[in-house]
Amino acid sequence: LKVCDKFEILISKIENFAVNSRILKRSRSASHHVISQLFSTTNSDTKMGRIFLEHIGGLRLFSCASCDTFLTNRHELISTRFTGATGRAFLFNKVVNLNYSDVQDRVMLTGRHMVRDVSCKNCDTKLGWVYEFATEESQRYKEGRVILERALVTESDGIQENITPSIP
Image 1 (cartoon, rainbow, N blue to C red):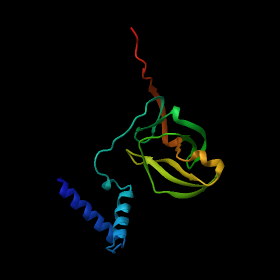
Image 2 (cartoon, rainbow, N blue to C red; image 1 turned 60 degrees about the vertical axis):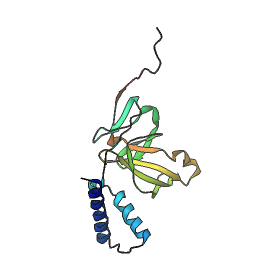
Image 3 (tube, rainbow, N blue to C red; image 1 turned 180 degrees about the vertical axis):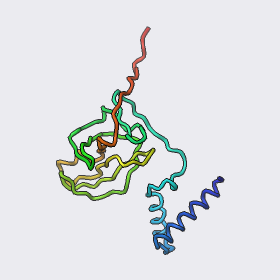
């Protein structure tokens, strides 16, 4: 398809979404809402282009259990003492190859938090959540950190990269 054809398809999807959602106002804010709603959906027809995946390496790797996409490594693990919807969950400092939902206000065992659900960038399987804000001062260490549910990820061996040059 040519770029102009793709653009026409996109406009058609936006118009259909607007009609289906009963958003018929022609104001700029309504158009912005329609576009943001269209692109925030996880429907596979809205995905366009290539998916670029990252890999941060490591000796022990954590990957999506559904599609084996790399997510993080053992070095980024902060704690294994968390609980998610499926049981045990791990707190990580850095996780890559994720999609993020809109911010949600949740009351958890440790207090009220603003969080985003996270899903695999490759297969869109929900994997956990990221803490955006904690209302309790004692819980602020979680902000920006990611929870991955143990049942939804796999752990495997990585490879050690020799980063020091050999000296003859």
